[in-house]
Length: 207
Image 1 (cartoon, rainbow, N blue to C red):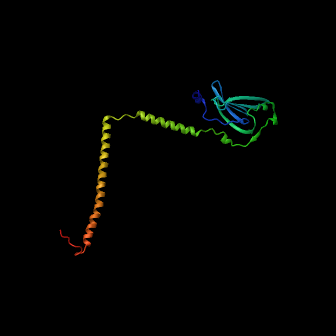
Image 2: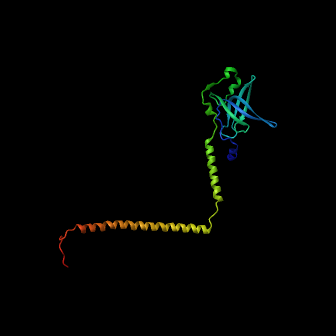
Image 3: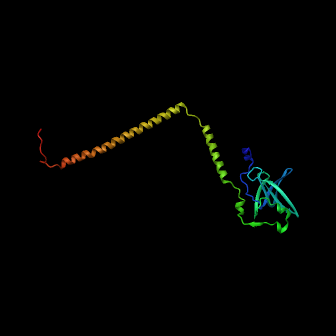
């Protein structure tokens, strides 16, 4: 059920609070024509904000008559919700506003960042979409790849064996070169010792 509901959810919603003055852009279909109607008022109640059926009840005074409308936030007919003002309230359901008129119906306004409150961009979701697309492309490339024939497998095996033989020859040559370098200093030292020896030194040993 959650997977089915996820397909109809909007990626992000404006975080509307009770007491906010909002402007709701609603899509109205009249025959073959479509227009956008704006309804501005005070949010007096929120319903099931974490579900697909999340909705808000907006109240306004039109020609001295109180009008209330309930909007489904995830509905495709609700194109946009703008937060115009934010007020300080202590209730989740402002039912007392129905019995008030004029100054008594005013709420204490709060300062807030209007641009940040109305920002509904989802950069993380876009990054995840790119990652899923890359993964799908890699899978398609692996599926489209043709398997190697037996001749190609044999050629690859011979090339690998030739590389191993070449590495062994290089190691043998390097070992011989190092052993030759160690022996040369020993022979040079012996020759230098014979050259420095003066005649008459030492005693002859008769066998």
